[in-house]
Length: 503
Image (cartoon, rainbow, N blue to C red; front, side, top):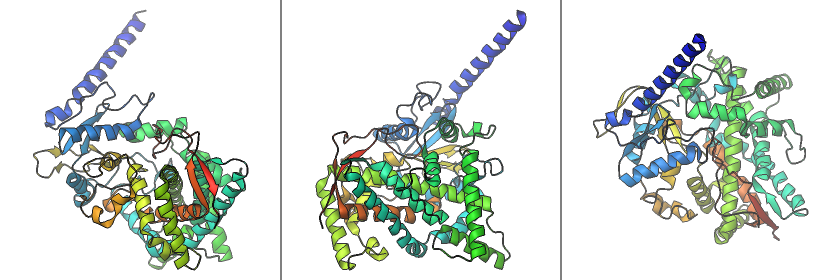
């Protein structure tokens, strides 16, 4: 009996010690004399991760707005016992993301290339390993390389319009995100892996199954996301897989298979795999280290994550807004028709890049619905905040609310209104820099930005040329966001009515 009493006493002492440590830690910003939001529980300023209503994305936005109302340039919040620094002033954000990047060159995410090879991708890498990989990958994403893949992406858009035509005979109200995701799966499969996925024709396509696995909010992903964004320190001591062994084997085996087949058959194709093969050839010629199959697979995996779901959700939000803003939809359609006329009835890469209103509509969608609603960095060495006496200590996480910036009425009056006119040249030049950061900014800006925008613009071009989008009886203009997903997405299915247009 005394043993049980002794163990219970030890447990109580341990719990009390943890509570006292958390309470003491949650006075960190007060001791630093930095404005902070008082924690409401032992979870700090975040929600109980097992009962989330807002999620990190909207919680960060609310914290941004609270500091903004106080008129302070920065502030502090807490993830349980861990202090997190939040810059609010665009100049401070610019310093962290660009000017003083050497102090904040990593995300601080746990990953293990040996135990979880697909986790060692560009987004997770820090320091020299990130820098070396970024330098090698940068030539893959130039505008010239995008131009070579333009027709491949355009070809993936044809089954998209054909599928909608076929579905309209059955139901005028369609799940727009599901349909768009088939298109993004096909473009990623074709441009990254060099395989024809046929997502629209084959409901059991293997690539489609794994594509949905990537973005599915599964129990494993919830645990991983919690550790990654809320408790990365814990992630250093325990290993939670983000990627299943099945997915890992699928990606690595596919990459290896494509490499072997192309080398033996001497096949050349305009896609990312071909570009990696060229990098390998160049590295051998210069007697340099080239990417291993596992390293290539890791980069291919992040292309799936970045190119599949972010593009699909952005297009879903864009079409949702156009359905409720018919005058904007019609204006964009007129530009599309004019582009077709000037291009002799076809879309070209140069024609796409010259569409100014398309660019404004896409940017306004990214403003209102940034795929990455917040950016995070880790302070890698002590940093004195410019024009203050404050020092951010090494190891401090940094949280930048892109959603907060994008909905700040100082920079975007009436921020809930969908207004592409915000991005005309005259208005853009009067806005402070670093107030529009849907792809991040500075040296760690999204490397696949050009490809993602090309994906989106081609699909919207084809869809609006053939169809008119209207609100469904089952839809509401105000959308509810899924709290546990990493990429900003909706909790409910977005359905729209689609009408075939006569040319």
